[in-house]
Every structure is written in structure tokens, then in C-alpha cells.
Length: 314
Picture 1 (cartoon, rainbow, N blue to C red):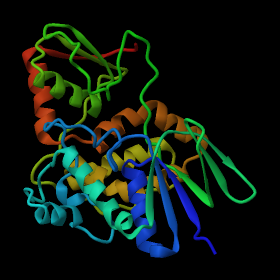
Picture 2 (cartoon, rainbow, N blue to C red):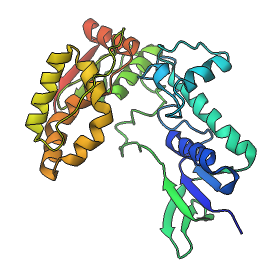
Picture 3 (cartoon, rainbow, N blue to C red):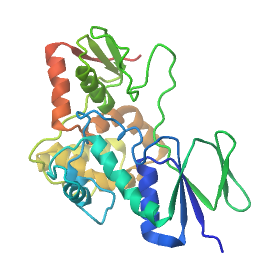
Picture 4 (tube, rainbow, N blue to C red):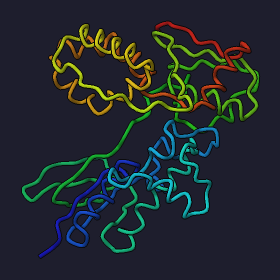
């Protein structure tokens, strides 16, 4: 009897982590096929950068592919001869190496197959699923998981994606407009500085908010019991009271992380829309903080006048 086949569309971080966990759980009892259009595994957009200044926005000790194996990433760093400081913000390219290494055991065991190509169609059949690849090739599986991650924005000739690594055409004194002031903006400011760009940079977002930095030493996450189902206004008052009680907003934001799904699911549609419209940008810059060094580069660029952050609609 043939083994059940699971197709995974996308071989970035999510796809490779899924493949590894499936193999850990089922071993040789399952056939896993990853369809990936790129040349590397585990990279995706985030971890395909080669910029040394593009670092993880989480300390090494909190990163890894296994929730029950805390410290696995740090142990891998040490085993591969890399600097293994648990408190360090490691270059994202190195974490890409780690994710690619996670795929090697199932590949070596023959349980994982990588098919290079672009999936252009996925349909359900009487026997499972059918994946159509660019060029006409098809693959049949019992199940399929879509792990395609974030797609770049649709742009005309006037702009390029913030995830585009080709900056050779940007003159050193050119004025550059960046739409968005989040972590990708931080990446761009760092990358522009590396190629010697000295022109003006203007970053625009509706509220002009930039990521807050992590601080050392880090406060442990607060132990919280959020008021599930309370209106957004009451939840916000509770959060502010917890910040006053704990004395550190970072501890409260980190303490909310295990409860975020339950909070979201307990709100009705109107409260979810209200959060998305009014509070999400503030949540994003406090929850998705930046490593101290990259944020310092941005603040130095602002202080010098090279970077201007503007609150505006484009």
C-alpha cells in the first residue's frame, strides 16, 4: 500500500518546519513533498537576506524549531562553530542556515522530496489533491498544506518591493521614499547605508510609528489573566493598569503573547474591526520590537536629518 503523501507548497520557514515536524511524528510512515520555486530551503523572504545588519528581532535563546526543545538554536550555533551567545541577535541569514539544516535528516532518510518549481494551481480530487506546476507538471497527494508566506506588493515601474535585494540602480545622492515605517523600513535604511547611500530618505506611514527596541536586561513576561470578551476600550484600560502595576510595558506586552489568540477570538466582529482600524499599528510596534543595534541605526539617521519619518497617507 502506498504511503500517504503530503504536499507542502512553499519551502520557506513554515514549509520546512512543517515537513520536519511531520517527519518527527510519522517517520517513514509518510511521504512529504515540498514544492519550492527557489534554490534554497527554509529561507523565504525573511531569511534569504545576506546583510549582516539584518538580524533576528528576537534573542537567540528564544529562537528554534521545536517548542519542547528550548535552546535548540543556540546548541546548533555552538555545534557548528558559530558564536553562541544566548542573548545575541543573530543575523537572519544564519537562522536560514539553521532552518535548512532541519530539513537534512528527513531528506537523508528519503522521507522528504523537494520539487523545484512554481505551483500555479491546487484542486481537490476524489482521491486527494492535485498540484499543477508551471510548465505543465502535476503532482498528486493525499493532503496539501499551503505555506507560501508573504507575497511582495504589486508595483509598477515607479517602485520596487522592500524585499527586493537589488539596490544597485539607486544613486548615492538620490532621494528615496519608503512606504511603511516598520521593520522592513529598518532593513532598508541599513541596506542603503551599506551601499554608501547618503541621500535623503523619507519613510511614510499613516501614523508615523517606528518599531520600539528591545532593552537589556529584559524583564520576564508578566503573568496575566486578560478579560476575555470585554470590549476593546475596557481591555485597553486593563492593559494600561497592568503596565502601571508591573512597571514595564514590555513585560505586559510579552505576557499577552500566550493570550493573543484567545483575546482575538473572544471579540465580536465589531471589536475586531475597531482593533484593526485604531490599535493594530500601536500593537505592532510594541509587540514586534527591533533589535537594539538596527533601531539605533535608524535613530541615528533621524537625528542626523538623513531620515525623516512622516505620518501621512500615500
